[in-house]
Image (cartoon, rainbow, N blue to C red; front, top):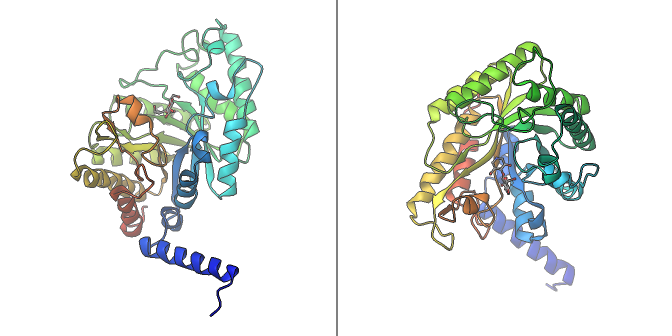
Length: 361
Ligand code: 9MR
């Protein structure tokens, strides 16, 4: 047989397809998750979209993306009267091109705010206007493109107390005398709903996955909001596991009490950190299987409750992850793909959960 240039390409493509099939006969993560009606996501950093292995892995394995930083105030709002949507738009366009849903993160946080805002000595009334304007502008810009927003991020501390912030009490946005102390959160949700009535609106927090004073405070707020018709659709559970395995029963119970209010749960920022050497290599090879078990348990808990509709990791591969700098590079290797974008046991474990866990009610 004469092999023309075109045929040669066919052979390469068929060979490549065959290889991919033999590595992953059951399909990619997003294919399996799609069959289960689960969104499987990754936090995305615009700087790495120029790296072929990064974009290939992201588009092949995930059906949801969330800008890791590009939608935060400091990124979007370089000065009081200007918005810069360049990086965030790049991520949103990438996701849309690859048929991925986009989660927005976030509209109100005590952290990662621009200096002009933090040092502007604004009055409560001015802060109200700034926040309303920001939410309308940003949620309006992404109307129909961002399907779910982390409207408010990490407003409570681990004791269930509202954290000090410009939005809450320093000096806090202006509020009616008789209002609750969660008024600034409520207001953010109402403004987000007005800007994009179709978007799902989430409250997102960390270390509030299990039943504890932190999650009790979030539950109390959620119950109050649902009772009074504040447009809250779901709770984001970050699930950064940096210090060992969580209490799975407690997480399942917390998810159940929240979904019983009619709320969705999104697992929004999952990673499972392992001890690593200075080069980022895992110290104990058995840890990879331990890590896989944590991922599998969480995926199973999510799949067992039909209100848990998304599972997202905080990054695509171990090559780039906040865990390294947050732990002075003593921990890392926290994601589903290693530094060379090769799938880890945790990847297989989530697939097994998707293939074998019974449907939730
Ligand atoms: O991973 C994010 C890192 O790149 C940023 O520098 C940092 C500050 O904006 O935020 C990190 O992401 C955080 C997320 O926005 C909220 N939950 C905790 C995440 C890890 O710190």
